[in-house]
Image: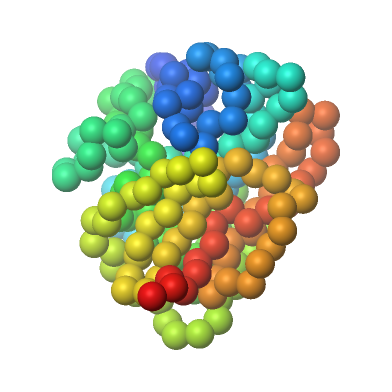
Amino acid sequence: MAVIHRTTMTPGKLELLAAWLPSRPWYEGTASRPELSKAGGFRLDDPKGEVGIEFMVVTDTSGDRPFSYHVPLSYHGAPLEGAAEAALIGTSEHGVLGRRWVYDGTHDPVLVEQLLALVAGDAEPQAQSVSDTPDLSVTAHLTGAPLPTTVTPTPVTDDEHGTHLAVAPGLTLHVTRRLDAAAPTPDARGHVTASWHTPDGTGNRARFAVLTDTTP
């Protein structure tokens, strides 16, 4: 299981995301520099122990009302081979591990494979900030045929509704970006549900990822 290091990152994750978020089509705010705070999330383990995998929720309070965003992140000790330039959120100096390349995890096959494994019940979600501690609040559901265990690099589509990946023929993974506890939850092949909190401390739950059959 991944070890959580009690150290610093320079620049920090929130600094990197504040510079990156306004470039995303699903960013709802109007600020060129969001005011971000950490609002929840969880981790998954890379079976090879090489890639850090985190599903972070940040809340932007720069506008008239707060918006919470779900950002899957992957952390590498070297540039991710074959990754599009747009996939890189930035680099940071980690107090223990040295330079880390921080990516939008939807572009990272390792993160996508482990997210599918979570949907299938084959990966255990881990607490975001505590080593070797499962996060029992994260739930997953799957119906139908088994999912692929490996993912080849696939085009990632971002729009105002979120991020979409064709993970297998006839199967699309939709990553929720703007979290809304009141959003409808239509039937799907599979999904991952997790928690986050609003600035006033209210707890919320929503689907962080949804797997659907692609309409021919």
